[in-house]
Image 1: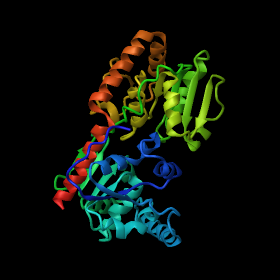
Image 2 (image 1 turned 90 degrees about the vertical axis):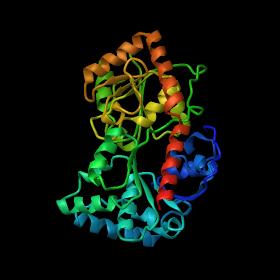
Image 3 (image 1 turned 30 degrees about the vertical axis):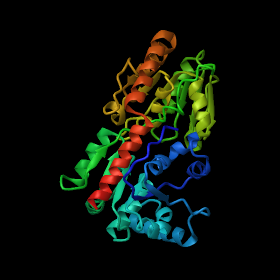
Length: 378
């Protein structure tokens, strides 16, 4: 993992994660292992002097009463045109989080319940809310009343963080000029855990990795069907892979592999392909940065999430293609595969960018500053 630097300012932070087997496995893995990357800087914040607790400390998961309350609250939210979320994951932690100086919500599925509970007076400490697709969730609210209620609730948080300049702009419109500050913080990558591996043979032509619903794997399969001499590997989540149907003979698929194996698959790739459907927040950012840190040439869809703010320059540190442009994506892949010198130059530019601007240390420093500012304002 990235080098941890102690910080003088100390405060108590309560971190809220989404409940998942992968997150539980990360919490039980050794500090410094690649899996800890899924904890949004938990270890590095502690090394900076932050006293950190989190909502998954209960080994047995949520108690039965929290599950019942979750069902009831989500039914009420749906009837009122709302969105809801994982109330069961945060309700048992109310006493502990209200004993902290600041609450850090890492994802919308726990963030929206926290926002609604704060509106109800049950979350009393400043809340730093990380948005990963919040505008698209707000677009699903039914009725002007629900939209006003959620906007009013969001104005009660201490600050909002987005990993996309575009998403941050959309959220500023939601909370208004008198609302909490909305900051764009570029996501980061551990440049020590993810670096080039020249000892690993590049025996797969095209590797594509991702589990979010905006990955355009069907586009990649159509390209693979036309390019039978090119070897493809797709690594995804169980749901997304199950929906792919019959695969061309030159396509291999893997499901839900651990992060250490993700690193191995990236190392084996001649080129990393990240086709993404048009959306407001997803740009395959995590895998993009991991592949760039490993000095891999990446062909990626130019969604608003990565079009600005990340320093990406097509042909210099990656190859950018408009979302849904199948012919352009195919030609970009073939062009990189046909020119090893150009591929190596793109990979070198990618590594330089993440080292200087998009490291995990840069990311955690920004998150630490956001949490400290929330404590100071409170």
